[in-house]
Each structure stands twice: as C-alpha cells, then as structure tokens.
Amino acid sequence: MLQEEAAGKAPRTSLHGHWSSRLAFVLAVTGSAVGLGNIWKFPYLAGVNGGGAFVLVYLLCVVGIGMPVMMSEILIGRRGRRNPVATMALLGEEEGSSRHWRLVGAMGVLAGILILSYYSVIAGWTLAYTWKSAVGMFTGATTEQVGAIFGSFTENWLPVAVCHTLFMGLTIFVVARGVERGLEQAVRIMVPALFLLMLVLLGYAINSGHFAAGVDFLFSPDFAALTWDGVLAAMGQAFFTLSIGMGAIMAYGAYLPDETSITGTSAAVVTADTGIALLAGMVIFPLVFANGLDPGEGPGLVFVTLPLAFGQMTGGAFFGTVFFVLLVFAAWTSAIGLMEPAVAWLVERYGRSRAQAAVMVGGLIWALGFGTVLSFGVLADFRFYKGTIFDNVDHLTSNVMLPLGGVLITVFAAWVMCRNSSAEELHGAGAMYRLWRFAARYIAPIAILFVFLKAVGVLPDLSGDA
Ligand code: PFF
Image (cartoon, rainbow, N blue to C red):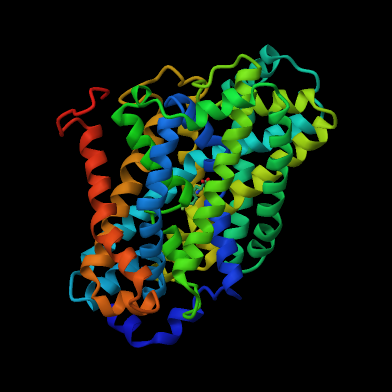
C-alpha cells in the first residue's frame, strides 16, 4: 500500500484539498492553537502552580521546545502529505529508517481523541455560560453567587452532558464538511475579535485596583512555589496550547503549499498564541485578587472570575455573551484540529467518507467524554493517581503523550531525516535552518527527557523544591 501511495503523487494532494493561501494556513493553525488552553487552562494552571515561576518555565518551553517541535511537525506533514500515521510510515521508509515510526502518528491519533473527550466537556460549559450571560444570570451577582452557579451547574451531569453533546455535534459537522469551507472564515473573524475583547477586559482589569498584584503574581518568579511536577505541567501546557506533539499540526501541514515559509508561519502562530494566553492571565489575576478569590481554585477559575467581572461592568451581559460566544468559537476551531488526525487516518486507511469518519470518531469521543462529565459531579470523589478521571486523562495526554510525541517528532525530523530533506522543506541551509536543527537535535529532546525524569523523581534533586 505504501508503494502505491509513494508512486502516485497526485492522490496525495487531492484527498483532502489544500489551503487556499498561506494566510489560510496561518489562520487554521492559529485557530487550532488559540482555544480553551489559552483562556481556561493557562490561568488555572498558573494559579495552581504558584504563578511567576510557572509562567517563566512555560515561556522558556514555548520558545526552546515549542518552536522547534512545531517546525518539525509542519515540515514532516508537508513532506508526507498524508495523515500522521501514513506520513510517519512513509517518511520512515523513505529516509531509510523504519515504517514503525507510524506509531508516533498512532499515539497522536489517540492523544487527540483523549484530549477532545474532556475538551468538549469544558467547551460545553462555555456554551452554557453563553446562555447564562445572555439571560443576565450574572448581573450584579456576588462572589458567592457566581461560585454557587458554577458548582451547581457542573455537579449536575445532565445539562453538562447536553452541552457536551451539542459541542461534539458542532465539531462533527465541520469536520465532516472538509478542511477548507467555513473554517478559514471563522478563524479570520474569531481570533482578532477575541483579541479585541481581551483588550476591553484588560482595561477593566487595570481599573480593578488590583492590577499590580495580578501582574506581580503572573510575572515575579518565586521558584520555591514551583515543584518538578509544576515544571512538567508548564512544559505540558506549552505543548497543549500550541497544539503540538500529537500530529494535528502535521495533519494541517499536509495541506500546506510548497512555497510557504514554515519558520515564518510558526513564529506568527507562537506569538499570537502566547500573546492571548498572557493577556488572559493579566485579565484574570487582577480580578482574582480584587474579589478575594483563590488563584489556586482550579478548572473553575475562569468560570468564576469573568462572570463576576461581567456582572459588575456596564453592558456586562452583552460583553459577557460576546466573550463566551468567541470562546466557543475558539474551542470549536481547536476541536476540529483534535479530530483531524483520526479522521484523516480513517479516510485514507479505510476509505471512509469524511462524514462517516467524523461521525465514528466523534461518537467515540462523545462517549469517552462522560468520564469528564462525571468527574465534576457524582464521580468527584473517585480519585486515583493524579486525581479524578479528568485529572488523569489531562495528565496522561498533556504531560506524557504530547511531550513524548514531541521528542519523537524532533528526533525524526532532525536525526532520522537526511539534511537535504529537512533543508528542502525549510527552504535552505541558512542561520535559521541551523538554529532549528540545533534546537530540534539537542535542546528540545534533552530538555523534555530531563523534565520527565525529574518529575518522576529519577534524577537527584538539586534545588530542594521537588
Ligand atoms: N491548542 C488548543 C488550546 O490551547 O486550546 C488545544 C489543542 C488543539 C491541543 C488541537 C491539541 C490540538 F491538536
């Protein structure tokens, strides 16, 4: 089968279509990167892990690991022009290594399915919060009231399950229709609009009277507050927020025109994604301190702080509704990326139509999502290893599968692929190329393995904080 695929170049390009332009690709990757990870997960993880030191490690990981991994993923994807499983098998063979590299693609398919199983539930919360804002539920609400609304909503499995179902339905719908239609348009409006609204919220946060405290929490590193588990979480977050390590970006790279610069594209996406996350942090933490909330509150952090702010500001019901709608869109464009590897694989490997594949994969993810739906309700006390079912799925994917995928992807691109192949994709052998190759050969894999080993306690303790 591989030989057949390798022989015919034409089917490579015709199967799922191509991005209509470089901008379309940047928009699609940005749409995948910017999502709940920036606005929901980054602030709550920063809060749980003590703030500044976590943020610093996260930023270091974004630059030192995230950039080279993203570039590696796009270049592999474009060279293979298939779903991640077939691409890794094909290139493994083409580069004189082994077809077993397909297991990297397979792990990505699995990671995407597992991540979306909880991502969709949190996106469902966002859907419900759009409604709650629109009907004015938060107008004038106190801290206690907003907390109670969150608690009673998430504890109740039925409405959460309904929202999760609705969100999966939306995702299946777009994925079934193919990569080009709708998606580009949605991202083109959504990302700038989200950015603008975050700026409005920033203005509000600056006036909250606790801006300095919030910014101090976010940017003054206190290394005593950070454990090696926290460092692992910061690295995992860098992977999660950039959508790397699981083949989503590889799948998107497969639809990228040959002449587009991979370096420029990656830099643009990383900058936009990091900007939105930091902006979210600068909005959330001043509000946390202004309202006497606990920064370490956990996954509910954003769903408590922002409604509180919207409830107090003029026109808050309007701004709140628009904000949550945008967040639903941001989650939606990310969810599409999470399903893409699995769907592209089913289409190419088993000849399914995109619609059939989307329904099959989406159905499985929907069912798995009940593990998370119940983690905030009746199964909240069912805890093992890292906590609830949600905590464990999140840990396994963000902190283990994505970084492991990242090591294998960079090792493949920078050690297994010959220089000619990677130089061809990255357009030349200049300084940028050498920088990428150095980071992908040494910095990223060594840093990832080091953090892994520290977090599981295999390496001896140097700083005394583990
Ligand atoms: N990057 C997305 C976010 O920050 O919300 C999450 C994500 C999307 C991860 C797509 C992985 C992925 F393939």
